[in-house]
Image (cartoon, rainbow, N blue to C red; front, top):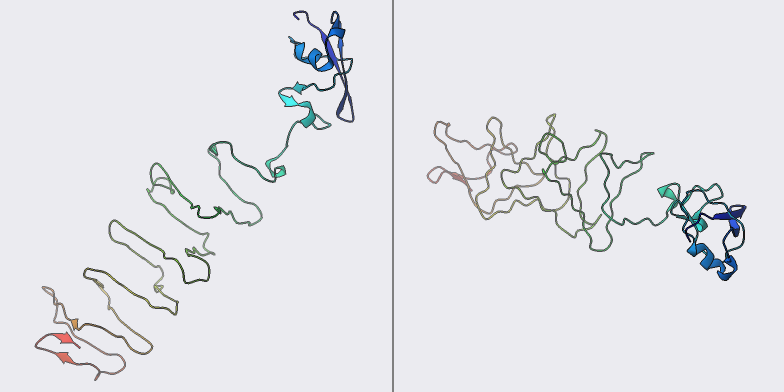
Length: 243
């Protein structure tokens, strides 16, 4: 069919109730669905009359059955889709993923799934080459395994020195009632360039090996002091150890 023909679509309450075809020679030889599929319209505007039953009619690539009464098309907002799924990578196009009403933003994989953060520059704080987790000042940053359980471990691995720094003279506190263990296969150094190092306990501080004084070049001979009882312990001058 090469001649331009007219199709009349009749709607009632947003539903297609009638489709007719004008000026088609011997159009009775077409079944209703065949008549629609046989048309090759060359204009964007179609008129209508007649009836078609089993025909798939689209307007601007939107199925007629999916149109609302106002002809707006499919879902007007993502919130209307109760089970959305991505068909490809999500590109935020320079925008952010935010929340309203003080709501949390949760990423929760199912089963044994994990969460991976990958950047080309290892940089989540632009310009500073850092991965930074910050709060507004009133909240906390919590890193935990299974909540309120004694299972799982948290590994912090550093290619160089691991620095834990507090501000405003705040102490580095461990509030758990469990054991605080520093375990290594090599030497462990606890050093302070300008301040004292104090070990305090509610009952006692236990050492499985003697404490040996280490006198560096240019430093005065070391001394030991006990805040609660100056007569506790034995200092062997010949071995320069406290045991």
